[in-house]
Length: 450
View 1 (spheres, one colour):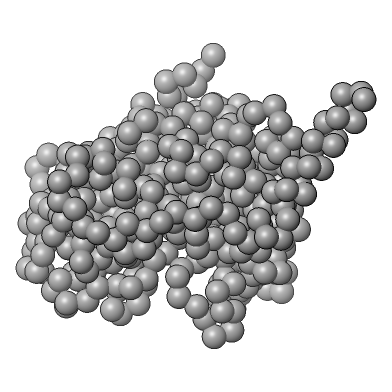
View 2: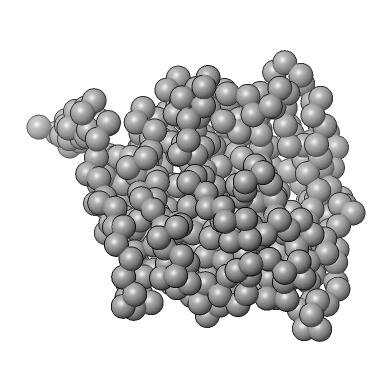
C-alpha cells in the first residue's frame, strides 16, 4: 500500500470515528465543581477558575456548529441557536488553553476546532467577513439590529485573532491538524479587509446586503478595535495600507489622552479614566502589549495604567456604592439589573463584572488575585456557578446575575493563561502574517523585527 493511500485511509478513519453524529454531539464533559473551598493555593484556584469557566465553551458549545453561544439564556425566536463570532474566537483560544493544560485531550480539542472551521466555511459571509451573530444550526445570519444584518469586521477580527492563534498551535503532522491549518488559511485569505475602507483612509465597522453602508460607523480609536486594524494590515491577500491606520484609527476625538490620574497613573490614550476595561483586554488576548510600542503609545503602559485607574476609582468610590474597594473592583461592559451596557468610571451604576479584574491578571496580578479570592471565597455562594463566575453583580442593589456571556467568560481563561505562561501571546505573535502587519504599521516589539 503506497503512502498516499495509507494517509487517505487514516483520514477517513478519523472522520468516521471522531465526526460521527454521536461524537459530534457529545464529547467527554468536564464535571462542574460547585463546592467553595478556602484552602486552595493560588495555582489551584487559577486552575479551578480556568477549568470551570472553560465548561462554557465545551459542555455548553452549540452541538451542531461547535461555536460559542452568545449567552446561557434563550430567545423566543432563536432558542439557544444564537452563536457569537467574537465569542467563538475567544473560545478557540480558551480551548487551546484547555488542551495545553490537559483539561481535555488534544485530539478532542483538534476535532472540535475542525468542526467549528467546517461550519464557518459554509456559514454566511459578506466579502469574507462574518456577521455579529449566526444561527448555530443553519449558519445563516441573525441580525444584531435592523441594519446590522451583514458583515461586522470587528467581530470578524476577534474571530481571526483566535483562528490565527490556532493555526500556530495545531502544528502536528496528522490529517486533522493539517486540515485545520489549511482551512484557516483559506478563511483568512478570503476576508476583504481593504474593501471595508470604501476607498477612504479608515475602516468601516458594518456592511449590509440590504442596507449597504447605511450604519456608517468609521472605526476610530481609542477603544476595543486596535486588533481590527492589525488584522486588516496583516492580511496576505487584502491588506490595508498604513495610512488607513494613521489617518483613520488615530483620528478619533478621544484617541490621545496624556493626563495623569490619582497623581500617579498617566494614560497615553483614550477618554477620561480610560473607558471600560475590555478596551485593554479584547485586542490583547493574542496581541502581546508587553514591549509593544508605536508612535502613539507604549501599550503595556496603556494597559497597566488603564487597569490601575479603574481600580483606584473603585477604591475611592465617589458614589459610595456598597462593596467597592481594594478587593472588589472592575468596571466593564456587562449585564446589570437595567440591561447590558459599557460600565466605567464615567458610567457607574454600582455593577462589578468579574471578567474585568480577572482578565486584567497580566497587568495587575497581585491586585487581581486579591479580587479573585474575594469573589470565590466570600461571594462564591452568590456568583460562582457551573461555568465559573456569573456575569456581574451589584451589592448596592442586592442584584446577582444568573447569566454567562461568551465574550466575558473567554477573556478570563485566556488572560489568566497569558499571566501564567504567555501561551496565547507567544502563539499569536509568532504568526508571520501578524509580524508583517505590525511591521507595516510601524510597531516595535521584542522579536518582531528580524
